[in-house]
Structures are given as C-alpha cells and as structure tokens.
Amino acid sequence: MKDYSIEQKKQLRDQIVAMQEASGLSANIFATTRLGFSNGSKFSHVRNNWDQPGMVGNDTWEAIERLIEKSEGYRGVVTENLKKVWNTCERAHALKKAMPIIGEGGYGKTFSLEKYKEHNEKNKRFKVIIFDASETKTQKQLIVGLLEALDSYQPGTISAQIRHLREAAMKRGDFLLGIDEASSLKDHHVVILKDVITALKDICGIVITGTPYFINNLNNGALRNRHLFSETRDRLFLLPEMLDQPTEDEALAIFEANGITAKEDLDIVMGRKKEFLSHSWLAKRTFRGVKDSIDMLRMADMPDFDFNNIQL
View 1 (tube, rainbow, N blue to C red):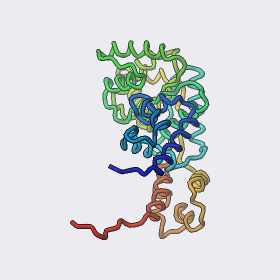
View 2: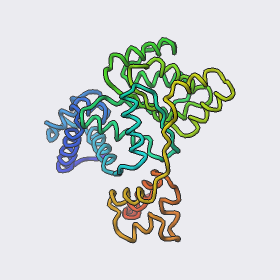
View 3: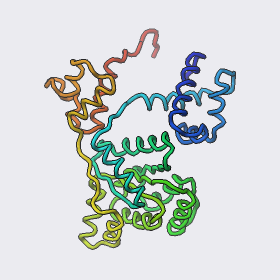
View 4: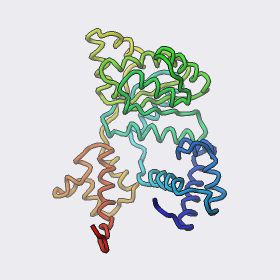
C-alpha cells in the first residue's frame, strides 16, 4: 500500500475539497456518490483532520487520488453528440417520456450522460440517476439494478419489484433516469423495458442509450410479431436520436483541450503522417479512439521502469 507524505496529503485534501465545493453536492452526498464511502464521516476527517495521525487511512487517500486522476486525466469538449444527448435528456425530463439514444461504442454516450449528471449536480438542478446496464443480461438483473440505483432494493418477484420501483420513484421527487448500455439486454430480454417505462409513466423522464443492436432488435422482433416487441417499441418516444462519428474538427479540439498543441504531436494523432497512421485517431474513428491517441502520447513520455537493484 502506498505511503503518503504530509505534503501529498495536503495537496489531495485541498484538491478533493475544491472538487466537492465545485460539484454543488453536500459533503455527505459527494462522499457517498463520488468516492464510494459508506457515509460522510470519512470526508469530514479528510477536510478537518487530514494531518492528525490515524484519522485518515491510506485506503481513503487512495480513493481520493483515483477520483482526482479520473477527473483530470481527460478533458472533453462540447461535441455534436454531447449536444444531442443533453438535449434529449432535457426533453425526456420535461415531457416525462422514454427517449432512446443510439450510437456505436465509443461515440460518447456514457461520457455525455455522466457530464450531464455532473452539470445538474453542480447547478443544483433536478437529480439524474444513471444505471449502467452493461453487465445486465436478464430481466431480473435489470429490475434489481434499477432498484439499487434508487437505493430501494427489496427482494421479491419481478412483478412485485416493478410495483416497488414505481413507489420508490414517486418518493424520489423530480429526477431523470438514465439506463446506459441497454444493448446488453439481448433478444427477448429487452421487452422488460416495456414494464419499466409503464411503471414510471408520468413520474420521470427516461433516457435509454444503446448501440444500433438495441433498436434493431426491437424493430426485427416487431416485424416478426414476436411477443411484446411491438408494445415495447411503442413505449419509446418516436424516432431515436442517432449519434455520429467524431469529426476531424472535434478530434482536434479534444487534443488541444488535453494539452496536445505541438505540431509534431498533432501531426501524429491527427493522422497526418502515414508512418504513424496506426497511432492516430483515424485507426479507430470514435471518441474512444481519440482518447487512446491521447493516452498513447502520454505513455510515450513516461520513463521506463527502473530495473536497477532488482533481484528476480
């Protein structure tokens, strides 16, 4: 486990307190939602007793350092895809409708949702709850995951849990629900969304993100008159919002926002040098590919491991 000097602790303490204050969240909510602490007492010790022996453990400093590195490691910009996601969120919330957002992997669905959530928190608007469905394979897992996201899990049958989901949502007040990576619900499992949307009707807006498989699965099932596919598709609001590949201008703006401004470096990551084309974002024309190129340059600047005095 890493040992932290008093100077490192002070720097981490000052950075995390500044992040908490800028987020617009209370210290307790920031501690539980961003840092994963069970309650706000740890954060209170970080703020007030950070330099007292035994008051803040190394595991706490490590969690703080990970969050800071995550927040500072990559800077996005306002892209056309981000605008589409945010506008869809606004409309879904205002109309209390279920609206789908479709885009290939790496098109910025999750990033845009998370930044929308952060924006709402910072500006103390309505609550945004995001459930990551990427590991959800069954209908039961989706319902359990949604209940846990609302801090309202109760065991029971799916039908009983769906009723409890509606009750929990009604108690929540004003919020938007994001179901991210719904494409993990393969084949007939996707029709559980009909029950979720019906249960939350007129209570909250729902934004459902997925790859083209998600909407194609619904359309193909409906065309073949498979059980509940048409009914599920009918619960979604009109046409899905379709996301696109990044443009060259967007890629350039992201590189510059992340400190890549030297012509030689930009020529590499923008694909202007044929011999380095595999290192450029053009090798993977997604926002994930842009980030990979940024990480590639950062790795190139890292020193090699010091093997002196290593015994194997």
